[in-house]
Image (tube, rainbow over all chains, first blue to last red; front, side):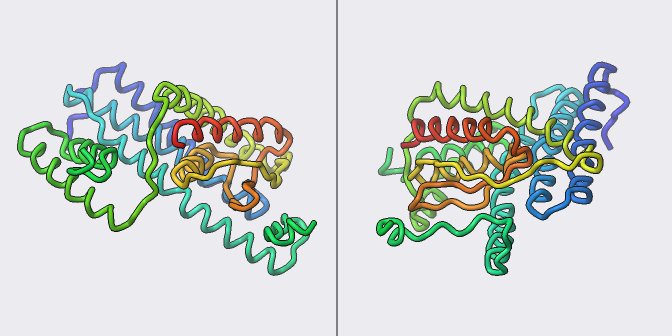
Length: 123
Length: 161
């Protein structure tokens, strides 16, 4: 497809470094899913993959193809933008669902639901 | 301008996105982009999103830089916590922060920032009490997190009031 061997050494090293770091970040995120003990802790693990991993891998792609085609390439920024904007939706959905379930089950290690405003006023 | 484009910023953003996706500034793609962004601006009217104006563009730049620095720092910190999770379990916990934001767009942006920085997860925002419940991986630095969230909220409030 493309001629990756045409990449000058400095660019190849930079692209490799970015790719490896990005892949390592994503791997650590997945490891976190396996190793962290509670559900709320595990909520944090994938966000490493969606922020650090995505940004580094997209930067590597931008650099690689910009050097190969000798022009500026920015459309990977859209991937970073849309992943950053859409991740909170799933994360909040999962968090709220778990919080709701834990409150219904009366678990003690979860913060109580704040009292409604009417009770606040009468206090 | 409002007579032609109900949401100018949204239309400009769509236009830029179109050019980026096409990777060209040829006259053809500019014409299609202008047409599409104007048309979709009118579609957005039906959704009635909250309008907000941008103020203090300089502050926006410094806030973006602070967010970028925080993303890098917390990525490294959380990676460290996960890698040594077996040896010493991280000290995690819930905390609530008073966040005085009315604007929906500002709240959405704050949620994006908090999610993009690993180590903080947005759980619940209570509009009446104006308090935000988050879960943090490193509860030992509770004061630091509280200060960070408040600083972002203050910055966002000034930019989008």
